Image (cartoon, rainbow, N blue to C red; front, side, top):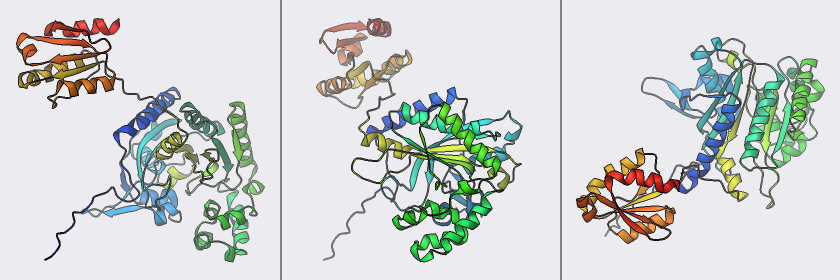
Length: 432
């Protein structure tokens, strides 16, 4: 006798996760705090498709980066399009800027986005295959003040949600005028040490040696400490730009640390780069940055637009939520608590409950109900749990009489009120 097949157990795809109702308050809180701050600083929201033409990232991000060479989710459509689930937001914004002729708008153009990104990365703590970011982009201004403003806004956001002690790590990677000499010196340094670095870094030396500085392998990190530093190769313009960025940060009292080996993982960066890194954990677990960014003066030109300076940052929302939880930082639920709970009993009352509920809701009174339940006791338990001020008890008799019982939850005092007066009566009582 053959054994019956075991039913398949379905789970979220590896490296992706559900955000359950009890965690939604974190996401609502972060979005509300972000939108309030960004509105004050003059950023407008933009939403781009989750799917993009793969060339947006091959040309913009760089085909030698880990994101493009190893981590893209690509697909071919029936119409012959070669698409990709977006792995980051900046290249999509640059594409939208060109496509919609946004160069004619007043500049600098300040935009922000909020949404899901996808990378076929190795899942581990704080590293997901579907993850959420919000990012800022300032397009059309080459000023060092723009870099400093973005760093300040990112840092201020993290401070405002209770994440104190965030280290701002900054560096400059120069530009096309001074970086080539540094790249040659860096390649010569690592070629003499190929046997001491990991296999991935040996490949990076051939494709883009700056990626070696982004390696997280302990052995490679040790060797990196002896590598040439970009500061010794900067031309006058890049030195002055970086110096002025730091002067702005000093004036704004933003605590920062110069990290001469910070390069970020994308090819489009020029000059200023930065990351937001939490303080070391008490349990010794690895610390992951919660965001970062930098200047990208050549990206829009690479994608077919005119030469346009720009700078941006992105913050990882999944990591920020995890950091809030690890620090046991409570966040307020931005959804207003209900003031009233509608308890109903019997078919006649249920049929009339929906229009009654809607009438009260449209009057601006926060109300909840549990329409499918028949037990008054069970519904009152829900009302207690929600900590409402009043329960409205609507049964068969009340439905026939055109009344409803208003029960004050704290005292248990009840009063019959005509249906046509219930809204005015609730408003009056809730004001008291």
